[in-house]
Image (cartoon, rainbow over all chains, first blue to last red; front, side, top):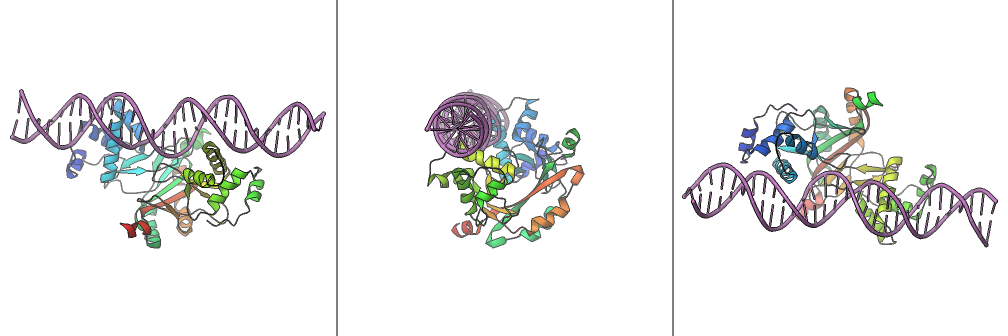
Length: 143
Length: 143
DNA sequence: ATGCAGATTCAACTGAGTTGCAAGTATAAT
DNA sequence: ATTATACTTGCAACTCAGTTGAATCTGCAT
């Protein structure tokens, strides 16, 4: 969702060198309106430059651990990724059974959920994911 | 969670033969207090009888399509399964970052969520999954 | 120029699930 | 009881999404 962030600066704050590939990953995600699979990110970058998939996986992994990205576990086997910057706070997602695409929904319901689900049974929660599944408007038109 | 269901009858209603292996899958899930991975189900059955993993995957797949089971997409790569009978309605789950185990939470918050997330943007939603992540009480004690 | 750390690549591997087909088993028709 | 048929299970080989370890490459400091 819209790249309002200064990516080189964002990486600087984390003590990570803003290499071409790291910036490319952030730019691909920053200019996508929806969460993307590693495969899609890889292919998008490959339209412009040569990259090894391992590099992309390692960047995604590193960024996820640092909290720069969020990794989404969804219906299909491949994880999806999205920016986790201040312009893109945690929010529910919608995944279509047909095309598999993942839309971002409004964050409000998730915020309300936090109050309800805090600390059940002595667990310490640090994240809530809400995933809505169904058929998206595009696929509804087609079928 | 507790096998209150008559599994042979449940399968009968679906027009599925209650074979030994199909019942074994249901019994393993019915007597587990938490959602299980295919691998765990396979191993539990193997404690008593010889089974091929393909058979278990096919049964899990078939049951999921019929709505007898729910498949949960979680943090780790392997899907988890749980009974979808009337004694075990949809509910949020808690997954621990350390041990990976999946607990079932109270259904109430999910029910309330439905009202909020219905039909965004013309999508037709048919399922909502809420996943809480964190560190479970057991793992908190250890570390 | 030389050394070094960090970044990237390559090939090979893993784990979870899938596919196609063969073999086994149960039920039905003769 | 015997054969035909469909359904169930098993086996081997494969796919897909990552992961690992070691080799190379790159930019920067000396």
